[in-house]
Structures are given as structure tokens and as C-alpha cells.
Length: 228
Image 1: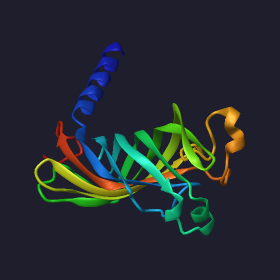
Image 2: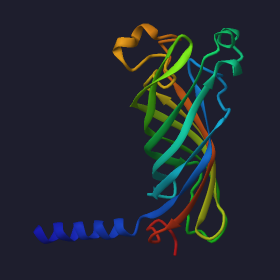
Image 3: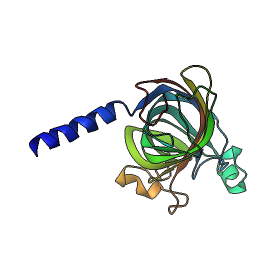
């Protein structure tokens, strides 16, 4: 029994060592904010978003994915279609750092070792952890608190990726982030002593959207699901 267990562990280890293909690369695009300050356009990038991305392709149909993206979120009331926001005239900006872990599912099989060019739409979701600057509004002006907080969120991404040249994959995607926070735009101050300064719809949390491209380099063992 002892030797059988050792044999099983050895086979599993061998299987895992030859069943992965890796991708590492960059993300470049833009961001826009959807909340209590500024425009409410769903896809309207107005700030640069840039970062790194890593994928472990577990099969032809799904990958585990991690990324770190830096950007700035900006909201300007006069750019809104809402007359009340235009009259109010608030503006804010906050630097963000997003760390994300999740899974990517393809609509078609995506075999990176195929000798022909391949492409497929995909969906991605998981968890995001977003660090943002804390601030509040006083007398109609944004006031920084010199502190930061983390907001937990859920990414909802739709994209298309394709093999480009040898070992290079290019993708284009739009990903909305729903956060479990209403503090990104300062409508709810993080400081409990400033709760009297809150405004906006307290029943709706903040969203932001990344629209951009990914460029990844593939490396690793030829996986077990590929035909040599």
C-alpha cells in the first residue's frame, strides 16, 4: 500500500509537471468610473491603465489568471448627462492599484501548441482587491485624507484572444468591476467622524471599467492535452 501511494503521487506529479503552459505579459488600456460623481457612461475610458498579467492554462478551455493593474479613476460632473450633477459641479480623481485573481473560460478550444493560427472569445471573473486614495468633499471640493483603503470587487470581463506570431498571444477585452464599496469617489468618507458629509445614492456601490489589450508570451512544457 505504501509503494502504491508513492507511485500514485509520482504519477500525479509527473502529470502536473507536463500539463501546464504559461503566459506572461502586459495589459495596456484605459479606465472609466461609474458612481456618484461624474458621467455614467459604461464604456468611456479617460485615464491610462497599465499592468502585468499571468495565466496558467490548465486545459484548452480554461485558465487561471492573475494580474496587477495601475490606473487613475476620474469623475467630472460637468461631463455627465444629468442636469443635477452638472449644476453640482463636483470633480474627483484617485489613484488605484488593482490585484486580481480569477479564471478565464474560452468559448472554443484554445490549444497554444497548434501549428495554425487560433482565436476564441472568452469570459473572465474572480476577485479584485483595489487600493484607492481616501478623500471626501467639503464645500464642494475634493479633500484628500492622506490615507488609502482596499475595496473588494468582482470582475466581469468579455474578450477575444488569438495567436499572433510564434509564442505570442494578443487579446482585446472590456472588463467591468463591481466593488463592495461606495468610498472610491468620496461620496461616503472612510473616516466615521465625517459621515455627515456623505451624499449620493447610498444603496449603489461604485463600479469602474477597464478597456484594453493584452500581449502575452507563452512558455512551459507541452501540456498533456496537446497532440504532439
